[in-house]
Amino acid sequence: MSPGEGSGDIGSISDKMLTQIIHNLQSFPNETVDLTQPHLRHSLSNVYPLYIFLYSLLVVCGTVGNAAMIAHILRRRLHRNPTNAYLMNIAVCQFIMSFPLLPLSLAILLVQNWIFGSFLCYFVPMIQVRRCTWQ
Image 1: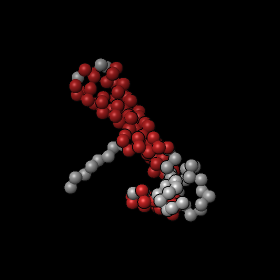
Image 2: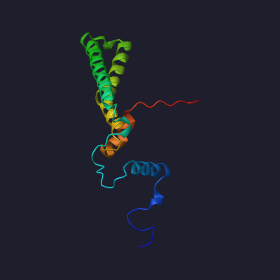
Image 3: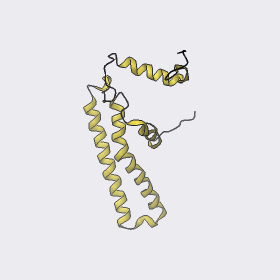
Image 4: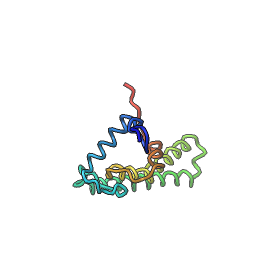
């Protein structure tokens, strides 16, 4: 076999992706580590309970508060007013952000390797809020 034949060519991988792969491989010096299992980041090993508590507080407050606002607007039929309809729209978006996305973001923060599959690899950045700063 020539160097270009076979299952893959390292030249076809972008420099950014290759750098990330090398960084991940250097983080796990043992070759027997099972990367299908979650591995806690070493830098957060002492403080991860605090992160879990704070994120849990955010999830509960965000979910309950936004659900209460949506229920209040719907119960009193205030959604016919454009301003209240707009506020309900924001509450629905924030409910989606606080209930399913915050726990997933916490897991991504705490776990060093990606264990969520290829669909979430592309879908999570689409639903996360990304602010562009043009300076």
